[in-house]
Amino acid sequence: MNTELHVTYHAFGVIDNKAEWPLDLPAPPNGLIHPFPGGAFVYTGIHSGLVNVQIVTFTEAPPPDTSNNWESIAEVAVVTKRGKLRLRSYDTDPEGPALTPAGRGTYRIRAYATGRDTDIDGTTPLTETYRLEVWPATDTESLVLRADDQYGAQVLQSMSHDDAPASRLPGGFVDGEAMNEPVF
Image 1 (tube, rainbow, N blue to C red):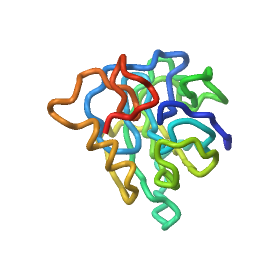
Image 2: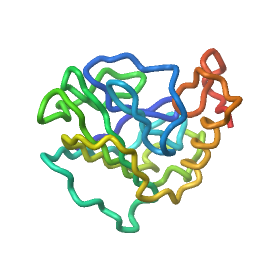
Image 3: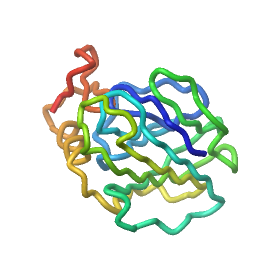
């Protein structure tokens, strides 16, 4: 599936059916994709606008594309109780077919990104490209295969402070704060 997805608040998600967006998340395992019960956030450099997203499902783990086309590559596990992971942004309902060919269970999502440093906090459309590879798996360890962009480092820094507020939204926003100002 290839699509142009409108994102807001520096993120889009892969969410199980119509699950709610969580507001209280622990520090992310990497600066690209952040798992939570029932899905995962993918952090975008732009605050809002269109990004290119390609999603491919597999029955088993594909070899990673470690070519120089990607600035960040990370992998996480997501547990789906409904078996209906779908692409979603804050302002859209879940889009496209279910990304869970084996139904309920644990899946790996390998996320690739390029272009996140092009217009950080901006709204320039289609400067960022993402690829998500999804397959059933039992491994739950998070992996970082590449982290060469600046925005991913900013996400980690903003969300991993010991004194950081407990309730953060994707993109580093604090619940109840002005949503157009990142917390860095």
